[in-house]
Each structure stands twice: as C-alpha cells, then as structure tokens.
Image 1 (cartoon, one colour):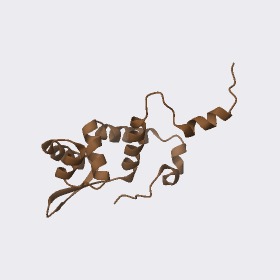
Image 2: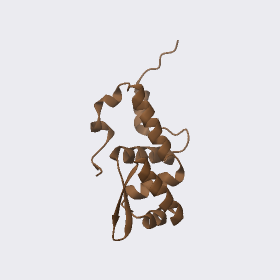
Image 3: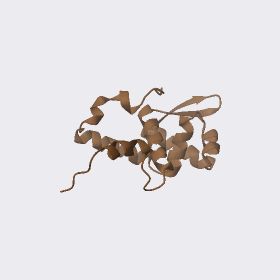
Image 4: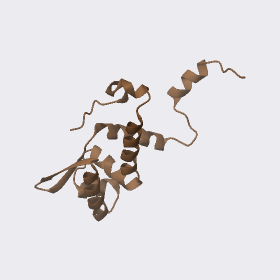
Amino acid sequence: MIDWELNLFHSDPTLLERSDDDAYERATRLLQLLAGPGRLKLFHALSVGEDTPQRAALWSGLDQPYAERELAAMALAGLVERREDARGPVYAPRDGHLVVALHVALAHGNEVLGERHPRLLTGRRDQQRKVG
C-alpha cells in the first residue's frame, strides 16, 4: 500500500547524511530496473490508478502486449505488486518512494535544459560569492 503522504521532508532525515555503500548499490539496481521511457510511463499510469495492463497501456500510449510483458517483469523485479481479480491481473506500485522518485524525475524532465527552479535560485542570489 502506498503512503500518499510520503515526501522527502518527513520520510527519513538520515537522507541528508552519507549512506553506506550497500544502500547506493541497492538504489542503483532499483533505478536501473525502472529506467526506460516505457517502464516510466507504465509506472506513472499505475501511480494514477490505471491498474490493469489494458488501462495502463491506453493511458501511457503503449501497445498492450508490451504493457503486459513489462508489468509482469516489473512485478517479478519487485517494483510493482501483482494480484488477480475478476478483470485479470491488477498491478500497483509497491513502494511510495518510487512514486516520489518518478514525480521528481518528471518535474526535472518537464524543465527546459539549463533552467533552474526558482526556489533554488533565491538562496543563491542572497549569498555573496567569494572569489579566490
């Protein structure tokens, strides 16, 4: 079950500290499993409630056979949960952290290259830059 209230500000304060090497390895493997436009589109479809391969394919603009195959592979990899119901297999994101990561990645993808988020700029504008 996804914690829809999950965000980076209250999920884990230790994220501001350096993690152990194993945590970086696990995070890398997880991101590699989700990498690719098709998988990201399907995961996004699931995160907004399109829970069957048919609905996820339609929402994401992908072919249904591709969606069925990728969702099954994502379930085997542990990225999504799969259960059977009267409509057939139904999928849902397994981890709210991945939904947050998807949203952050999409926000970044929606920005123009080189454009900085206004909140990031305000703190830097107020600081004097030291040279040398």
